[in-house]
Image 1: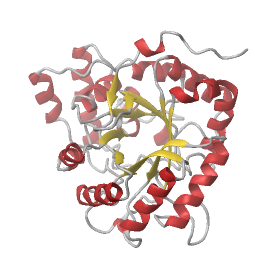
Image 2: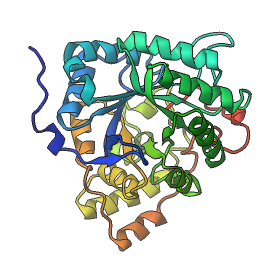
Image 3: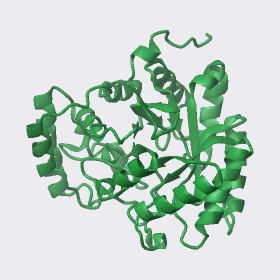
Image 4: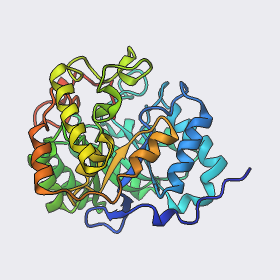
Length: 355
């Protein structure tokens, strides 16, 4: 049966302007980092993406190596796009990234012009698209001049393969430099994608102020701390959950007794607000107007619907914010800190874990 999008979809989701650009993004966007590789049924993925669009989610975020295996999330998204969403292409914001390892050898990683533009061409082919709306440098590269990396993003835009340029997990200092280079090239920096959650507040120490000054939007990834800020781990690690897998990006440190105790306390605050813990965590990330959108994943339609219900509910009392702040700490949660450090991103011991 031919898919027809819900007619009321734009009344179901608030939208926010991305920095000082003309682009608006939904308060909650859908990321395909997890659950959209070949290890999950395509029909489940299709149901999630269609339901998201019906509920006003217009932004779908990918990267070259999302899977598993690498590239399969883009390939699967391409199948779903061709089957259901092609008539709505002009109502969608689709993004992809390059910067982590994708193929063997010296030309399939980091931030060289050769890698970024070759990767973008491959991503477009996998998704069956003429262009993406946003193309990101996925992480800072200490060995490639920033002018080369930003020049590749500018070329992606001027060549028509992308409409906007973005960066992910850059420090405030590098963000200022990147924005200046892109501005000089006539391709303004649209957006920064950093990790941000109640348990991972690093962007409040300079980056949000930097983005506001530069007129750059912010889309927060991992606002649920990879599932830690949900009810899933309140009573241990469920069989089949992300943390139970050998390839999990959730470490033992993240599931420490101290972190779980903090999460349980946060869950009590959420219940008092009439929200689930996940909903409160998303509302909290969106409480700051400088955050354009919060990026979620979903393994089921039910999980998607629960999380999207947080949109439009970003108001907190002073007492609630103070109570949350008392428990807003978490060891080992920001596993991407090396990339966003002002120092050498090569110290990133989690280079195989890609948001």
